[in-house]
Length: 177
Image (cartoon, rainbow, N blue to C red; front, side, top):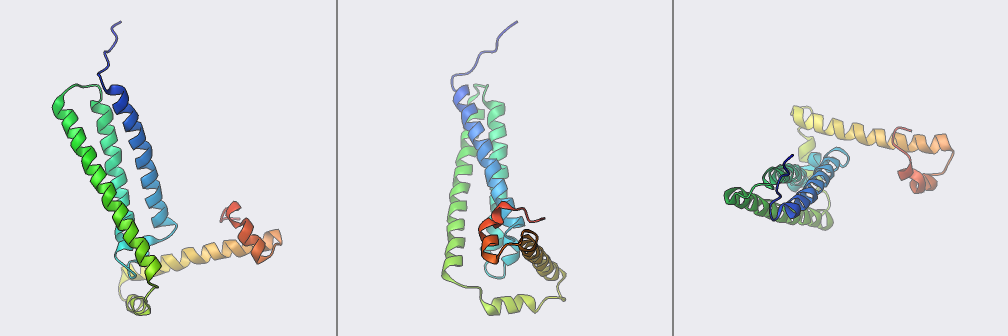
């Protein structure tokens, strides 16, 4: 049986690729939480960054995942072109990460510095019932928020606890109690 010879940097490439896989999974998970739990994409009437940041983050996580898979595939080769291409893709992912950081900071600044403009909400709600995408957006947002509020009240009633006790104990209980 013949053993395969490892290349000079294969161990370090594989270690960095494992790190990239874990990082990309966390990035995708964070973006999905922003979209599904915090309804970030439905708040685009406040600022366009609410729609851009989560979607950009998912795209960046997928790109990072693909780059790490490519890194695993070429880590055993000693072909300079493949390694140079991998280095270029890593630089591209790095620049994408910098863009993600700056957009997330801008989104945070928008949230901290300004409240939701009443005119912006009224303009968006004036299209409720007229534009089917806006109607679906607001219906989903209201339905999800009512379900969460109902679950919180159900937690208080079933466990015979006060509002403040439910606030303190709330994160320990799932929403479907």
